[in-house]
Image 1 (cartoon, one colour):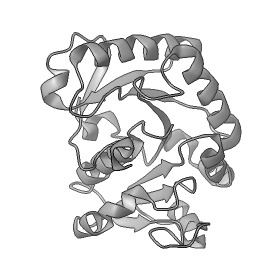
Image 2: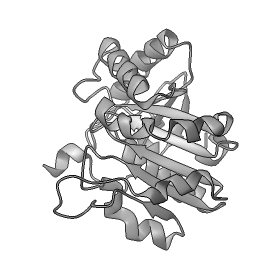
Image 3: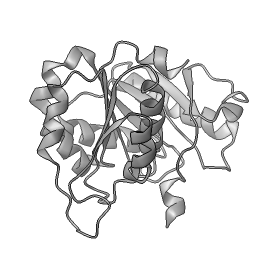
Image 4: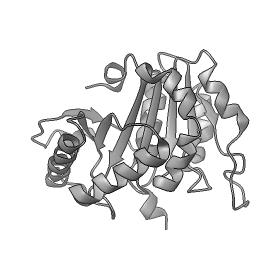
Amino acid sequence: MEIKSMFEDVRFLVLAGNYGSGKTEISLNIALQSSIRMQTTLVDLDIVNPYFRSGEKAEELRNAGIRVLMPTFAMTTVDIPALPAEIQSVFEMSAERVIFDVGGDDTGAAALGRYYPSFMRHRERTEVMMVVNCMRPLTRNAEEILELADRIQCRGRLRIDRLLNNTNLAGETTADMIMEGEKICIECAARMGRIPVVTTGIREVLDKCSLVTETMAIERHMKPEWMEK
């Protein structure tokens, strides 16, 4: 399924996930595709990583007509970033789509929680998604994923509406990895109230998979976070 049809009626898209899950990559993909058809804003709420990884692509995003909002001290040498008051404006402005790239754990999700009243005013047009990479620590099995999901929902104060199976190992990703990730995510989704699961990945690898969930092909704009170390 194409991104544009999957989120046709969604105004606020919230992507949360553990460090290395690929939520920033997916945020970039959705923002760039959305900007072709509508006014789009990308908001970084990742105060766990003060260097705002999406900010590395800020110029590319702005050249595509995307409004980019990030922590005040992101991409600087200041240790503690602050969320600018301007972020609150996205709930009042007429932007057709706003994408939130949320911090990688329950601590990062606390930044999401401060906007809870504003999200609830638009809950019917808000979708909260948890990005899962079963090849990364802390999300390798159902129990780990469910524990993290509970912490994110508690701190972020918003229910997770959908799981995105983004299981990958960069250029070493195989179809078997993705299919095993799908199996784990389906189990988690059933235990979370039978929420939908979507599997994401590079098209040439997805085409080799036998999947029962919907798929969303993405392009790689960034190196995986763990390869930057």
